[in-house]
Image 1 (cartoon, rainbow, N blue to C red):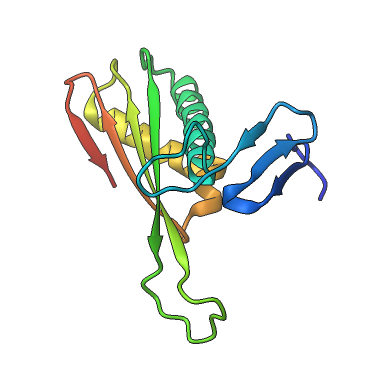
Image 2 (image 1 turned 90 degrees about the vertical axis):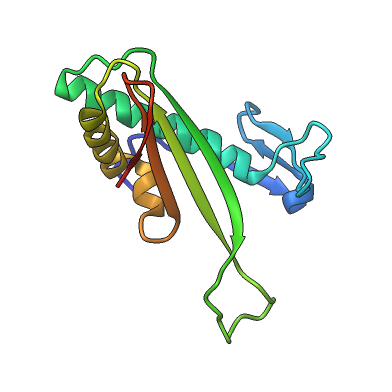
Length: 156
């Protein structure tokens, strides 16, 4: 692959969901655990890491859209919730039983923007965000925004 704007150091998983992940530069060195009840004993999981990454990337996209359109957005935030759900499409060729799908809820807070402008900005951020482009038509991503009126609005 050529033409990178950015490329991560290698990140290695040892042991999968009940193991660890470590980046070659040592900045990531985490123990992993998967427990549906949330009893992870101080460990993270792949979905939490994906949520953190997607939220940061999407927030940068929102800020870029705001800067390009000359909108003042105030103290903006992006919250991401990632879920794992069974894939409802039955695959008769699957060798290992059920498959699973991710779902993502992204909630943006733009406290200085009206609802119509905010929805437009979130849609544009979703268009340009690399995580949104990677998941498009493959992961259900639900968008919402809280605006200057203090209300939460779904973005379609």
